[in-house]
Amino acid sequence: MTEQTQTRVTSRSPWTWIPTLYFAEGLPYVVAMTVSVIMYKRFGLSNADIALYTSWLYLPWVIKPLWSPFVDIFSRKRTWIIVTQVLIGGALAAAALAIPLPPFFQITLAIFWVMAFASATHDIAVDGFYMLALPEHHQSAFVGVRNTFYRLAMIAGQGGIVVLAGSIEQWSGGNITLAWSSVFAVLALLFPLFALYHKFFLPVPESDLPSLDRSSGGILREFFRTFSLFFRKKDIVTILAFLLFYRFAEAQLVKLVPPFLLDVREKGGLGLSTSEVGIAYGTVGIIALTLGGLVGGYVVSRGGLKRWLWIMVLAIHLPDAVFVYLSQVQPNHFLVITSAVAIEQFGYGFGFTAYVLYMMMISAGEHRTAHYAICTGFMALGMMLPGMFSGFIQEALGYRGFFLWILLSTIPGFVVAALVRIGPEYGRKKMEEGQA
Image (cartoon, rainbow, N blue to C red; front, side, top):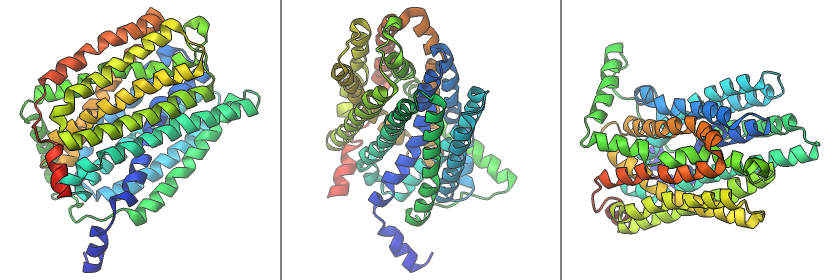
């Protein structure tokens, strides 16, 4: 690497690439997990089918640790980021073309699977690149920033895109096919632009290099060694329990909130239009979630994760009670509904900060990229399995009974939080050293 290149790399501001990188990371995920739910609901699928089949889309994020070592071994993280962004754009374009076809559900679901695998690989590279390109004390400082732009992608996806779909539906006289095909075409155009931008604006850290030799023996040894090191971590049982059960209630809730908001009141829902869901849940709700994440990152940087852990545990779980209120009362006022959603989302954003920082803490050290990917794989498994049966529970209990069940489902989150060990200075000390 030349001296001129080194100067350019070390002077690259994180603000030039973290916002766009995490915005690009968030979009395909929200398409797979939330936008697809709303789209399939508009096409008339049952809640049980929607929850079951869209929960399967978590699988690439669950099993991504199986190929995360290869992202370390082959090529730079920077190269993986650019290539996978091009692949995601192609998958979104294919979805736009498939929606008008008669067997659209099967075809789009298969396309979403391809997109999800590309997106999961993109996540591995992005999260690893973040930890390589930033000093450790800046990693805590920019957690709020990366979460903010990830959430802005969610606003663009389940907010802006859903509102756009609803507007096209209304403008076209209820042509749902045209509406959703159009919005996927818009999404498809964004990712070649992301790839082009990141080709020129991502830094080139010296540490972003393929690891070890590429012989078959070397690859296999490194692959199994990476997993072995992770599962030999101290308190590994507690670590896995926290990753799987901290969001046990949220994993079920997230799959049924859009159908609840869309379903007619006779079925126990709130009867909102597609655009209203995009505003209440996808825009105001995600803004509240983003603010919660920013506040969470800030308070941890000042007081440390251990000091704020239990406040975050309460914040992520107790606001779920707003959906008990909404399902029991079924208020008509849009402002009341939106405010209730915002309260729950703010608490979720605040409480989720603890989860992200805990994953970063236990991934520190050798093979941090692969180990962080393993953590996020268990995180996805913790969302996938409860989400798969959530639709069946809702159909059996109705919305009123289901949201009461959600409150009971918060108990495992409290239990696993009581088991984790966090250093008293984690988060706080690193930040202060970075500012000194």
